[in-house]
Amino acid sequence: MSSLAELMLDHSAQMKLLVDPDSLRIMMGNQLVTRTLGYSRADLLAMSITDIESSLPDVFYWEDAHNGQHQEIEGQEGLYRCADGTMLTVVKSVRIVTHEGRPLMLVLARDTRYERKVEDTLEQTLEQTLSQLRATLESTGNGILVIDWQGSITNMNRLFSGMWEIPEELLLERNDAAILEFIAGRVVEPDLCRARLRATVDTAETEDLLRLTDGRVFECKSHPQYIGERIVGRVFGYSDITERIRSEETLRESRDRLEDRVRERTAQLENANVTLQAEKLHQQTLIRKLEEAHNQLLQSEKLASIGQLAAGVAHEINNPVGFVNSNLGTLQRYAEDLLRLLSAYEQIEPALTVEQLDEISRIKREIDAGYLRDDIGDLLNESLDGLQRVKRIVQDLKDFSHVDKAERELANLEAGLESTLNVVWNEIKYKADVVKEYAQLPRIECFPSQLNQVFMNLLVNAAHAIEDHGRIALRTGYDETHVWVEVEDTGKGIRPEHLSRIFEPFFTTKAVGKGTGLGLSVSYGIVSRHHGHIDVKSELGKGTVFRVVLPRAFTDEPCEVK
Image (tube, rainbow, N blue to C red; front, side, top):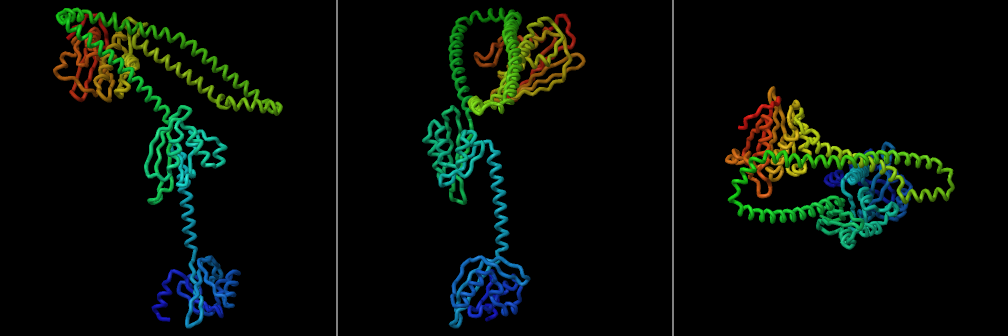
């Protein structure tokens, strides 16, 4: 054999042995055989093929070859004996070749040790990936369903089976068609649901709203599942959006009602405007009278109305809240006693007859006794918590109006500011984030209900100044002689030419129907009667800061209003 042919054989990726079928002697072996099995070339030439392939099937095969039955083999697993006595697993093939008119047998063998290691590594990686995938499916916030291209369910998470309320026995049967039909049967439009579940090889991504027969609404999004460029199935994600849909419907109804009220109010204002135009000649006289009366309007109309409202609300709510709170507490104790009695009855269930036990078990299943036992306590606790919230609301109304404290007194301005913020919160919560920077003010002698009116006017104005969404900052501070409360907004600001007029009665920059123009005028009068003043800083397009400055010591001396 030429050196080039021998070089080519020695660099082959397979072990190669040339065997004489008549004698079963090894005529030649390449370098990979000697390196892998540990035999020298001289050893190989002195050996029979059955010295290496010594398993019983191999011995029978070579015995048949020796008797003239030459049969080729393709990809057969076998064992090779190494020089050190160990056995090596290989995959071998046998070819019949002819040399100088006589048949020879060429054995091609491949060491599979490294292949098995790769297979084991791949299996471990696949198992780890599948475990991570299962954990991901279970931790997601959506119900997940995976269907392959043949329409079989390959995976679903617990949230999916729970939200669709699939019976446990149906899941245990693993009847995919029955499960998919059960899902379609829960939907008001089952044909749409079936069509989506069957379109597993569609390339489009879909998004549907499914209304269930029990009133719930699910959002379904589906995507094709690819391996390379081939679609192998589809992934469906389901979200329960029932509460969101209900909130949107309620919001639309509220918006429609509001629009009707706005149209009605607009018509009224238009009629009022016609009347005002006819009475234009009398406006100057009316303004003078109202300027003289607006201070009395604060006491006689605004504070009186607010005080009466708060007093009425407190009186009407506190009485029923008191006995409802008492009754709920008693009901909670009764429920605990009944549950304790039920537990005692359950202790003697083993003494009952089989028929009695079956009847009791049936009733328990019908009323879902375990759920009732757990839910009763939660319902009562939630009801008691709701009553506490009602009591806090009533207290905030009382703190705002101080209906039971109409005289001058020592008061905490920060507490009054908090109560006022709670009262007008509905006006603010959708317009701004509120930031509080309190300095723990000392108490001062004042009329708390009047100052609360000032705070309310400033807070409402700040909310109205913000067009989309912004920020309202509440700050307090003090020194040796004064305390101050500051309300800052990020609204549209006040024009420089308007700053000198904002405390004038009936002056307003708001649209018709949005304000009377008395809020800041009344607030200015209240602060002045407390021997204080209001500072204003505003930048157009950036916001406004109102600071109410009050003396720490209140005197009865008349104050000079600047």
